[in-house]
Length: 256
Length: 297
Image 1 (cartoon, helix red, strand yellow):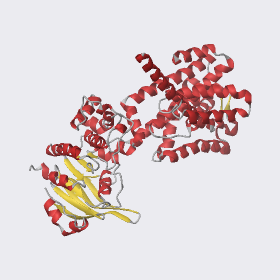
Image 2: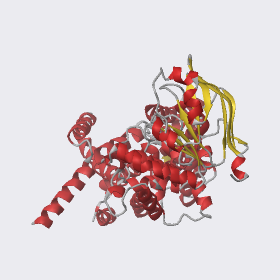
Image 3: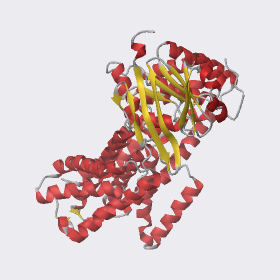
Image 4: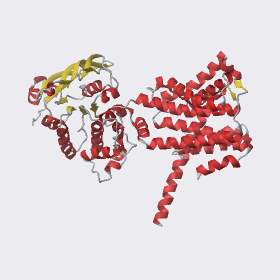
């Protein structure tokens, strides 16, 4: 590993948030090296999505800090955080259903961030969009990229959401249950894509319930339960931790 | 075709119906302004605010500073747009009906403020303002502005700029996560819609040679909305068409006196029930069906 890969790209310090009486995230700290692939797991309602919302600015934390590349981004606006290169997908896909699939990508492609990265030039955005979708398995020559997003099946929507995040040219990608609701075959074709992004140096946080697939690709796993971090380490280490076994109510998990 | 018709109409229509045409164009502009905001998910019930601000800016400049219409109208467009954006940008976080409520209240607030403080002529308004040089200028200015805004808006929406606005209507959080400052975009939309509404107001100020607090009346909020509902929102052509139907219709019904409004309401209700998508979408669909029929035949 190179020296730059040792640098922390993201540092989360004692982050906390409660909604009414529910402590959604409690005192969670972790840091992420440049190029690292972190998996976050936990039972339903354990605060995974809230944690993503806190990092990306959609929810303001009650306490704690989020440091991205040495800059304090706590409670910054979502578009500011995205502009710095933190892209995310949504558990419940959020897309522009009244636009054709490829036009969905025009939105991030016309953001100030992408303009800056392209040296002030937008270029042929439609072409870039179709190229990106082609990578995601929307065949360029089929009619799929040109159909209204609202008319596409769920698996395509999930990948369109991923494409929307990738169009931003992120440095940190946060995937919030990308595979939920996807067919086995779609997962099988999407997983290599994510591995490829990782190999190309992208730092990724992946929240997932499909542990088998998750463990295959991540470097490290963090486990949340009732908003608290109960384990952090390699998948082997984590799944043998007593607290984790208890959180998952003794469900046997097969690793790798 | 409709463009040519609109360009010829001012010559053909004299006197009273010429005035109705101008009136229809002004409400058409307000309907376009409404539809523009609707395109980025801002549901407004207060087009009267834009109209009134424009009207008063033009009125004040010509009454106190004796500016001619050539200067007051551009100043009103700019000033009205800026004021609208400044007044409504703090509430951009509100969505749907909450935003609508604020926009509904704003013009009423101005109306009462002018009435109670007696500012700018109070309830008497400002009168004896300079008119347009002649009625041709007025007619063609109204028709020209109406067509210009219609085409600019349609063009804008088919560009990437409009795409972002439409995306904000679909899902503003997804737009934010794409790194775009939605509040700034919405403020820009407010400025554009406000500027168009302000032009309509400034135009009427010089047309009537008078500006009073009635420019903030509910009519200027509701009629454009009704026109859009009738014509079919979301296309600009729909609201434009709707206003062109609604305003002349309401004038034609004037002979009925008080019953006019009742009949008018019935027509609106019927149109919403029978053609919820609006007249424009209906015609468009029919046209495509006809085209297919011809092709097959």
